[in-house]
Length: 286
Image (cartoon, rainbow, N blue to C red; front, side, top):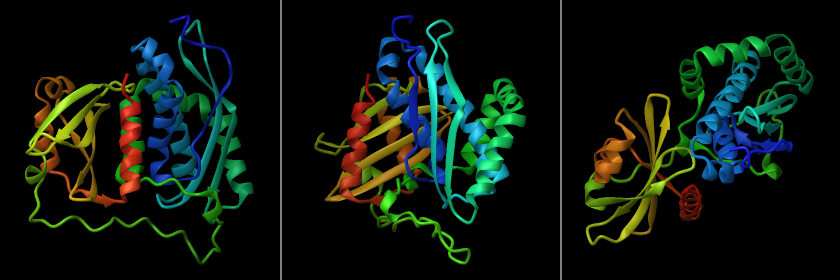
């Protein structure tokens, strides 16, 4: 692995994103930035996952427990990091951490709280995460908005609202008619391959065995996160859910994903958004 790591400083930015989606955006961004390293050494994906969990734990303390932000508030997070060639670890430069919060919190308050956490509480936070990473990641996940609700926010549309005008919470689009079941749409699934974050990518087929969507299955603690995009009769739908099964079960019998999707209420999404998500999923393959 010594040839795949680098001491060069890298920068991670979440972009403008709703606070309820910050943890997933940090995870996806870091895996995307380190995709080439993970491809060369699959075991490195565990370290990327660990580093993501550590940073998200620190951000949870700052954003949720200290600043008391809400899921619909908009944030932007920036931080530098290195990949150490000797320890094979992702090392965050917490001194470079910058957080912007677009809500009714003065910039001075944000800066003061970030400085306090990094100066007085960082070591204890990292030690706490190292001892119980799953418990802390579950706490972060409980705050996070469903992945289907994540939307990046164009910078031109973000303004700090007046005290009496909080940012509106994102609203789910109407669910498809209850008469249309997933088994009416999907008849089989095939494994396309492994993804850079240690999961699987499945192709979903209709009754004519024509591809109509993709589903990723990603390990997250003791659970598997299912994220499927299906385009049927011109309508794009996204299915987000969890499974307690084993990843190997889907590798051996990919069509069991249909049973999982049958228990998930989908959300209609714009066609261009569906196409973008499908491209991202294909790019996540080894």
